[in-house]
Image: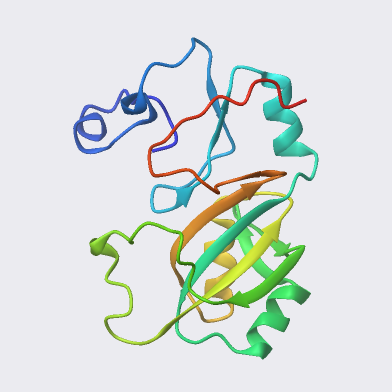
Length: 177
């Protein structure tokens, strides 16, 4: 989970939190969030200004999404033109900066077996770049065109990539501004 702990006793017993990855400085916070079923790159900082800059200034975030079904060119065009999703009870037109169908990434760890990926029909992968992040943004976009997201992996924030990192690995990058 993209938080360090929880006051919810049931959640604290069942979930794995960032604090399980090691010791972190006081005041550290995640830059953006990944929902519980998503995975990938997460930046942590004690610099509130950096956090605000990344979250509010149009920094690109790239995702790989494994979709339920073989996505069509028409569906990709539909996504690129923008689709309407619900955000906090209001309609919002979500439009990626870039989208493309890709081959299945070979550098990702195996998916959690609970996802049951590909058991009933074929899947396909896309890469998409967003400059903002609404609640379950990518999942809502792909569902709106009939291709629910089965697996979602954030692979890049700005110029920082997931390349060379393994699951649960933390590295220090010093100042990014």
